[in-house]
Image (spheres, rainbow, N blue to C red):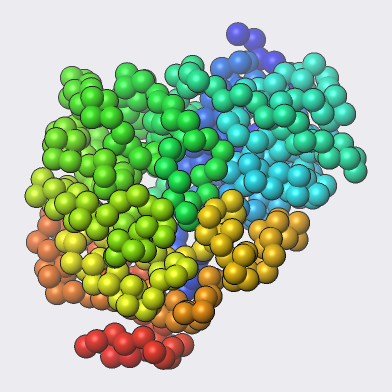
Length: 494
């Protein structure tokens, strides 16, 4: 297929997140990952004859202005970006650089944030088009219109977009979700520096994949909003990509970023059988819900190379889990992690501090629960009312946030992200509880002994050293604040 004249450039910048009280250096020890969204779109439009390029500023430790010459040298006709809500200010920076470097290029932005605040996002004149929902078909149509010589004024009717033509913003009807996601190619791994990505808990080199789209659950704090219908990639295509990554890049571990990988016991067994049939040695880790994990599933995945499983626990009491609409129980959580521990699979649990209507006793129960589950790793976050969530709606109704904060955040291009202060918790108390949770969990003698007993090589030792660096920053930052009213038992009070 002859190359078409339209050239498409994909740019990734850092993904801002609430990593306080960590420094940028410590936060990046937690990991820099490739953008599957951009690499997947690049593969899709390349398959249709377009010349494509990916610039990952984050992994190259570059600011947007550092890439100006590279952008101009490629001379793209379309520049594509993706945005989560917290990362929106950084995406504006890229778009402003792109607009200045190549004034005639279309600047297109997609990602989860566009499914909520697309019209507000396009009040920034550095953007031309927002893609809402699944991006492949919509973005390909934008490329085809551009190939035909169309400008923005000729694209105001594309389904699944919001378009800014001068001062006029047009919101078009949504595009129907594609039912068959098997038609989309694997990510364009050859266009990104696979060996440069890193994460302190992963074998290197590693890669990331997604095998499903959508999520049928409705947890009150989660902003996965645009696709409730579950769609699956075939087992054969999933394992094809795993095999490609192992053979062509020497990938040692794959991170499956599905919301819930463990949906369908027959699918899990078929996946494990296919991995073993091909003789793959690459390890992998997954995200799952505790109510989708049983011994049979864990054993099937373990024989295929499962190294670790990550599950959201969030709370230590059934009462708070019900408030969160998590649709799991404490008993299910204990059972799932016990099975993983008995089957020799590493575990990570995720916990949330300060949900609405939680009490101090609830938080203390969560900290004790986390420390008693036998986990290898735990992550603790302060509850954040993300847009389009039940938590955000409640926060607005009760006055915990000022109006539609995220809408204004979009229009202003940033702002101080409010922590969920309630009648029960101040922001300082929430941060103190998070620090207490980390200290209680990671400074337990039994956990330290277990980690050293499991350490069998350089990777494991580096993993523990990186974790110690991050933990020391958390402790230092909190102790310096001298925040009262949250006892730390034998470690004193901060």
